[in-house]
Length: 196
Image (cartoon, rainbow, N blue to C red; front, side, top):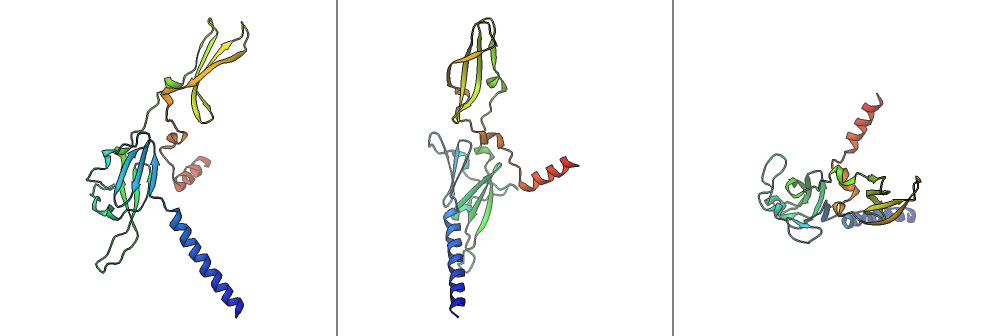
C-alpha cells in the first residue's frame, strides 16, 4: 500500500513538474533578422538594434488566406516565427466563459526586410605588383571582418597586416542564410529523393 502511494505521489509530482516546465518554456518573444516580435494581448514588433516600434503590424493583420485576424490576437501570449508567418498562441473565450488554447497564424512578411549582401562584398582581391591581398569576409570570434595581408618579398608567403570590421556585414548572422527553413518532413523527403 505504501508502495502504491509512493508511485501515485511520484506520478502526480512528475506531472506537475512537466506542466510547470512547459509553462516556463513558453516564449512571448521571438526574434527574426533585426526584428523582435512580442505576443502580449496583441502583436508588437520592435527593431532589435534601435528599440523603435515597427509599424508593420498596424491592422489589419492577415492570416495566410487573407482573413483579418487582428481581433483574435487580443489574448495572445506566445509566438513562434516560421518563414514569413507568426504562429501566435491565443486563449479565446467560449459562450460559457471558458478559455481554450488555440493558435492564429499571421502573415508578417512585411516586417521581415532581409538584408541582402551582394556577392561582390565578399570577393577577395589581390594586387601582386603591390603585394596586397584583401579578404573581406572572414569570421573571427563571431564578427565578420576584412583582413588585409602583405606578401613577404616575392615569395608565396603572406602575413596579416591588419583587420577591421566589415561594415557591409554589420549585424549579419549565419542564421540569416537559413531563411527558408526546411521542415523535418521536407528534409526527409528531399533526402529520400536524393538517395534514389
